[in-house]
Image 1 (cartoon, rainbow, N blue to C red):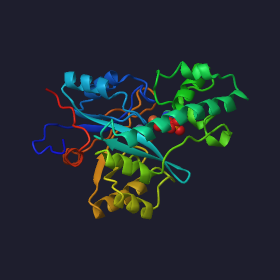
Image 2 (cartoon, helix red, strand yellow):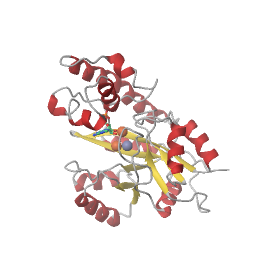
Image 3 (cartoon, rainbow, N blue to C red):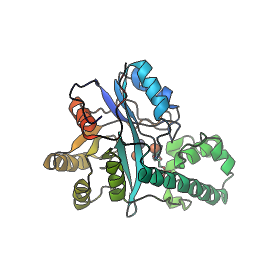
Image 4 (tube, protein in one colour):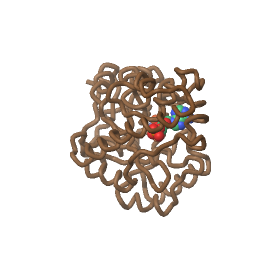
Length: 290
Ligand code: AMP
Ligand code: FE
Ligand code: FE
Ligand code: ZN
């Protein structure tokens, strides 16, 4: 922990993958197998607001000969913007962090029920339809509602559901509780973890430079720059700030199984950057193959 001078991992590395513990479509072991098939040798499981998949992912990685960085994608919100904070190698038993994760996951349930009630005014959709698409105790989100819409024949796939009925312009959207990104960064850092903003350069969704700098002052360790949702312009701005502030820079797929077209390894993180994440973390150790 807090030291990887001997570089026990090897690349290529993809540090952003989702399983059925949140909105991926495959269980953690299958996600790890898919990553391995795509040639990856170091991975992170980063389900939204939960660590429930860590044990299964660790077991799968050990038998596949891959290194696992246990992680999470922490839901935060800056003004109206949803901000995702990739969180690596934090202590999963840290009480303040756990309390916040539990609060977000709990609030997401009522929020998803409200969205479904809104949709049910106009379409044939029930809460049971959504439960049928959601693994017990998974972090529930709009992707599960999308899957229920697909099962009902109301959308062809998740993409069409998000562009249609789930789009805020249709009027069914409801927000869920999420802390501001400063609190998220502080909680993760206090739990010994490394906080990196996921896809910060999405079209029209970038936080102002001044806020990014303030987050770095608050403990933010880096940016996920290699991600298909970052625009070319966003990447340029992020690279400049990362250089100025000597940040960790990552690239990852954001694989969601069949839930998104993103494939494991479509973006990767350099060995040097993986080593910096491991060196900086004190909350939990990476899981290395035997
Ligand atoms: P929520 O956090 O419940 O508001 O849902 C947001 C999640 O939906 C994100 O984590 C994305 O992975 C997923 N998502 C957003 N847009 C799309 C899309 N067009 N197709 C598939 N998944 C999407
Ligand atoms: Fe997601
Ligand atoms: Fe995200
Ligand atoms: Zn993600």
